[in-house]
Length: 184
Image (tube, rainbow, N blue to C red; front, side, top):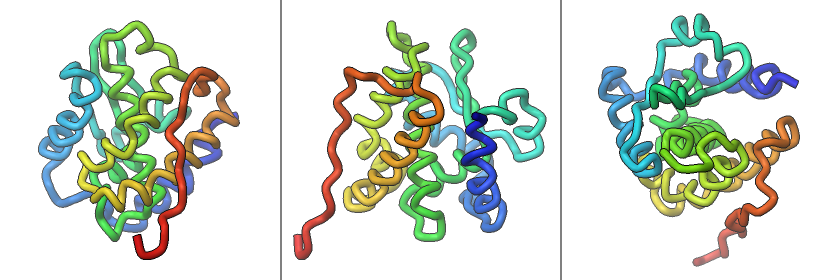
């Protein structure tokens, strides 16, 4: 099944209904996302956030929410993903979209990293989940907000694995989530 048909129409509709990206110029925004990605890619590559019309004209927009060019070391995030990543920690951005942005950005950053598993979706997805809360904090979430976003990331991962089993790494130890304790 096509993940875009399953998940992205709702994401894109929400992203278009509300202005989710900060008012910073696109260049500043992609520099910010590239800086976060560099933490996980070990300084390799760049992140690109195309305008919605440019994304719609991109070959990958019909079957993906983001992709990484392994040969030329760049990542392209769809508009809903960019808006989510740039809106991490912002009350006006839906939590599921913040989690999507943080998870996909981190996932693609591990594709940029020059390591032996960079082309293995399961290994890359595992690392994105392991580092999710830290990435959310780097993108602007408080520790409590990062913890609150983590269940959304787990749900997005479970959905993705159900549709595309190659995103599952049987050896991955996914950090557990537990509900917050009252008064803690």
